[in-house]
Amino acid sequence: MLFSLERILTTISIAYNRFLIDYCSLINLRIKHAKCELLQKKVHSLENVVSEKGVSTDPAKTEKDRGWPVPTSQNQLRQFVGLASYCRWFVQDFATISQPLHRLMGKRSQFVWTPDCQMAFHTLQSKLTSRPILAFPDFTSPFILDTNASVCGIGAVLSQNQEGHKQVVAYASRALSKLERNYGVTRRKLLNVITFVSFSSVCTFTICTDHNSLNWLNSFKEAEGQVASWLEKFAEFYFKIEHCPGLKCSNPDSLLRVLPAFTAQIASNHLQFSVSELSERQLQDNTIVQC
Image (cartoon, rainbow, N blue to C red; front, side, top):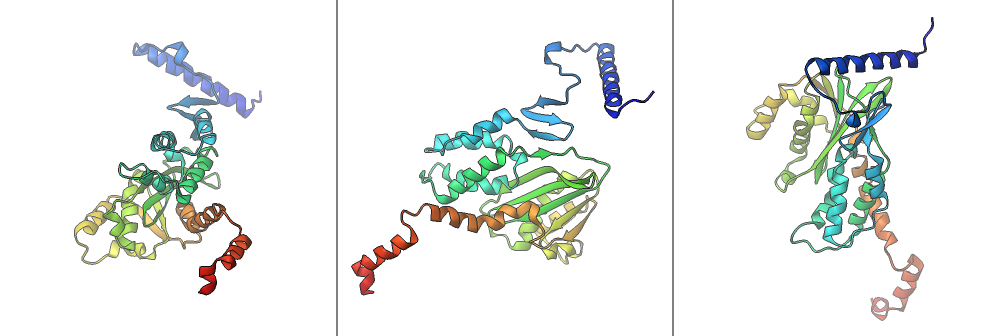
């Protein structure tokens, strides 16, 4: 008798659930029926949605971000950032994007909504409502760790080649401290790698970076202090480093590369006059004419 693949998988799932129930009975563990979801294509777990494709954000949470009005006070801004932070693992470069908003929430900061804040607010709304899906990691296959560091933050994208496609497994990012912002380019790139290298500590992986100097990571001569400590930490992992030019290294820093142009676009939208009107008013200004 021929069985379809769907029926075979259903039979296996039923058998597994029976085994689970029998094992719980064997160890005298009780299960509450109202809190169980068996034979489901997707379930809600820890405020996320888990399906056969991977883990995604809960639509009930992200829909609140879609209609969130522009904050007009620090309290409203804290509420939005707090809601957005729950799914920061689904947002690429979350720390870099949200930095203008975090600066505005400081105790000594005046609440002045700038074009940078508007850009960060709009970008977070867009990314949170797009419902990204993180694939399940396959620990029998190598990982790919894309890293990048800017003057204000560091970020990484952990991915794998699954079924012929590059699937994102996790995003990670954080802002740089005042001291770390004074690091040189090479030290900042090293900090980026050492911060997120533990993501792939269970197996071999490839580090993709746009900084060519890291190719000689294992041949640094006379390393001292912090760098020597980092190199000792790197010795615990099995990895290789590939240099990816900036234009090809689009995963970890795509937002950083379009940041100036996008900021200029938002700033121009806040002008009260068109270019022609501004030119006419300049000609009518006696001070400018005399110059």
